[in-house]
Structure formats: C-alpha cells, structure tokens
Amino acid sequence: MQEVAIRVEKLNKRYRLYERGRDRIFDALSPSGRPKRGKDFPALKDVDLTVYKGETVGIIGTNGSGKSTILKIITGVLTPSDGEVEVNGRISALLELGAGFNLEYNGIENIYLNGTMIGFSEEEIKQKLPDILAFADIGDYVYQPVKMYSSGMFMRLAFAVAINIDPEILIVDEALSVGDVFFQAKCYRKFEEFKKQGKTVLFVSHDLSSISKYCDRVVVLNKGVKLGEGAPKQMIDLYKQVLVGQYEEQADHHAAVSENPDALEYGSKKAVITSFGVRDENGVENATVLKGAPCEFHMIVEFMEDIEAPVFAVSIKNIQGVEITGTNTMAEKAFLESVRKGEVKKISFRQKIDLQGGEYLLSFGVTGFEKENFTVYHRLYDVLNLTVVSDKNTVGYYDMNTKITVE
Image 1 (cartoon, helix red, strand yellow):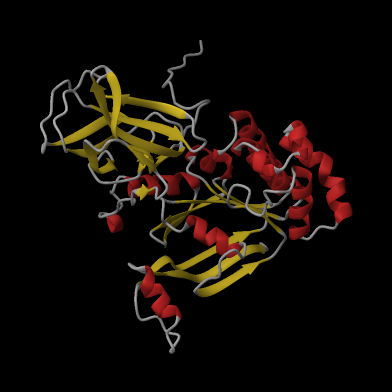
Image 2 (spheres, one colour):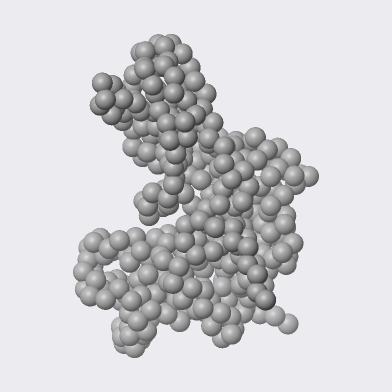
C-alpha cells in the first residue's frame, strides 16, 4: 500500500470581500463577531487531493483558480476555512520569491535562517552549506545583504536552499519562471534526482512541457474547483479546453484580467486611455492565452484636445522588467490621421503569441509629436498581467517556430 505524503479533504478557503474599507472596520468591531457587510469569495471549494510518497504531482489552472492558495494551506502559510490537511514529512517550500528571507541579512545568514526554520541544527546546515553555495553559484554576492540582489540572484539562492536542505517533500509555485535557462535546467535535473531518490514533489507551473515531462499525475483547478485529476496528457488537454471556453461545464469561462494597482501612469492627458484589455482567440476577455494562438490587445482612447497625429502603442515585459517586444501604429503605418477633441478611438493589436510560457506585463500608451517634440499624452506601464501557457518551451524569450529535418 502506498504511503501518503499529503492529503487534503473537503478543503475550503473563503475570503471576505468589501467594496469599502469602512465596511471591513464595521465588521471587525461588530459586537456579535459575525460579519454583516461584504460578501464571501470562495477561493477553494471542497477540494480533495492525495499525494503519495515518491510522486511528482503538478497543479495547473488559470490565474485565480486556487493553485497558490492550496499550496499555502498545505505549507501552513494560510489557514483553511473548512477541511482537513495531513502532511507526512519535512516540507521545503518555495512559494514566493525570497519568502522567509530577511532583506537586511546577507546570503549566508539567510541560509542559516531558512535552515533553522525548517528544523535543522546549525551544524547540519554547515554541512549542507557547500552544496547550497555551489548550486546557487552567485559568487561573493552571498556575503552581501540580499536586498542588493537582482531577482535572478534572489531566486538562485532561494531555490538552492529549498532544494539542497534535504526535504522529504518539495513544494514549488512558479519559482522557475525566474532565472536564466541554464539555471532552470539545473533545477529540473534536481527534480529528476529527487524522483530517483523517492522524494515527493508538488508544483504549480504554466509551463505545460515541464508538467508533462516531470509529473506522474496532474490536477486541474478552475475557479476553486477541482475539474479533474489524472495522466498529464489528459489533464493538459482538459486545461486547454478550459482556456478556449470549450469545457462543457465551463462554457462561460474566462480568466479574469489582472490589473496592476501599482502601475505607473503619466502624461499630459490631452488624450486618455479609458479602458484596455486582452481578448483570446474566441474574442473573450481573457488574461491567459495559449502559446501559438492568436489574441488581441485592445484599448479605448478619448481625446480631450485636437491632436495632429496620435501614436497608439503596446509593449510586453517579462516579470524581471526586460522589454520583450512591442509595436505602435506609426511603426506599423496603421494610423496617420488627425483627431478632433471629443473623438473616441478603439484600437486593437492582433497577433499570434509566440512567447515562451510564463508571466508577462502589458503596457499601453498614446503619444505624438508637437512641433517635432515627442509628447506623452497618456501611458500605463505594466498595467496588466498576461499569462502564456505553453506545452513546448524553447530557449530564450520567444519561439522561432523552427522546422527541423535530420537526414
């Protein structure tokens, strides 16, 4: 009989959402202790999951499906609203970039801090230190405060600690989207070592090729509900049906567009971007798109003054802030007209997405030239999160769609 590493039964997680901050305060001070304002949002609904020792299990789903929530409950970061959680074995978890790190400590101090939190003695951590440093490979930066690290160095050290601290269960949430391709390859080789050693791995990823290659079983979540569980190929096919709105019980499905509350906004406001979004190949507002599929970025611009030749633009960054690609109506020679005050323009950028699977940030802008001086009317930087789901990731930022012959 297989030994159970992780078991959750009838797991529920509800959040109380309020339209106004004062309603939250009213409920907090309510003499009865029972919330009367706001409404419950179910992040997880009666989810059952069993992971056996030695298995590698993947969880896939669109943004907001409950993937990260269930991992945080399993690791004790969150408390469930209802349900049972059973964990048998020492867990090492990598849920968020640098979670559990003290930004003022240097790398060495954070290694000892994390090892102690997991339950190792100082002497045990000292024995593992050479392996951790070799895996992270960040040189003398390990003696600097981690607040000085780039996101890539942060990730390398965090993952090196998590994977070399000898856990019985490794839990990873999209962590490998940070770091160069060679470091990611090294991490996945470590996954394979773990599998050979009979250790348990539970991980979330939008990289379907990794899910397919490394997982024994896959669970599909959607809107907090477990849609299915089984062999990787079958579950990936199910997930793709969900993404394009063809899953019979989810015909109205679309992934909520995630707007960044900290987006950078500036400009003269002679023209104002009043709305923006992403539509998938079916014309549905959807922040999650399949690699290789067509999609549309769109915005509506209202003009507060006459503008001789406005330029409409869109650009894509990765989550490390690297500008991946972008275009505008001037470069595409798509619109070279004057616009009058009070006019409203609807702009659509249609393209096939050949980016690698992962998370990206979208920016929109309307600019122009006034007496040969470049002028920004309205820019929204990093305003939307775009998720690209892939079952084949190649090297670098985008896929060249290469056709290979070997004779």
